[in-house]
Amino acid sequence: MPRARSPRAACSALTRAGGPPGLRAIAALVAAALLGWAAVSPASPPDDGAFQGQNTRFSWAGELTQGGFIRGLAPDGAVAVTVGGTPVAVAEDGSFFAAFDRDAPATVQLKAQLDSGQLHREALTIAPRQWQIERVATAKRSGGGSDEAYWKIREPEYNAITAARAQRTGATGWRQDFIWPVKGRISGRFGRQRIYNGEPGAYHSGIDIAPGHGVPFVAPADGVVVLARTGFSLEGGLIIIDHGSGLNSAFLHASTIAVREGEAVMQGQPIGNVGATGRATGPHLHWSLMWGDARLDPLLFTGPMN
Image (cartoon, rainbow, N blue to C red; front, top):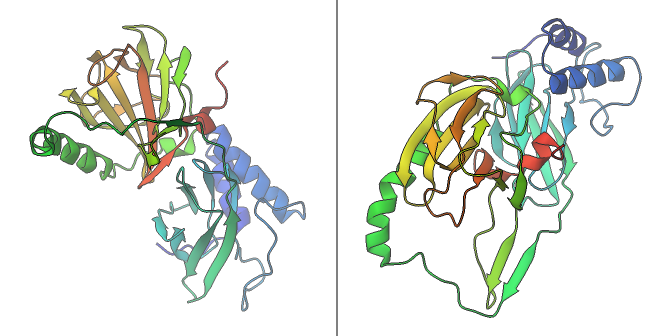
């Protein structure tokens, strides 16, 4: 829906709403830019035809790195926004969430199509990361059994996961500062990968936390449960929560599940217990985050574990 509001009005609305710290910080930074302080996003000349008081630029804050994300405000009158060609949902107040895959390129374009017909664009510089890479002199192993027999089991699971991730529930947890679902020893980090005789294996798509078998874990942000099932061949007990704006969390290897599909959950609410179900070598919680097809680093959402 086209917006005809000034950035000052948007910031005021966010502040009055008493939103989460992350979004309030964005509002404060944007307000500072309006008062002549440093803007959140890199300086760029206004678009031709801009009128006085119109916000013709993006304002954002976040983690401009592979596996990272930004939250921000779109230009006034934005009717379509993309980042790296991927559509971005824009809320009625102009706020948005966007993220960058583990293998995101060095530069991505953030674009807004305005209701005036103009196209505004900004180049985002994405910092590369040094991933934990292990090179081994052995052949890459298959998943076991014939591909046909394996896919007969895996296909319905894969389809259920894909359908769950595609759901759009209107959840607003993407606005929040995320918390750790459980605290304990980190046994696997996001992005690590093995290379088998020059052939890359799949990289680790989340973070593994090993607090002990049966320890409860909680929702890291508000959302709606879009999948809650046991018995998956790889994931075992699996919970997926939609946080809104295309962002979702998955929790693998649960010994028990305490929520049901369609249930709205609040940040900090217990949702299951740590286990070793599915393809796991020991009890741990695998927590992964996705935005569309982009896989994200949970550590960038929570900060270090205290």
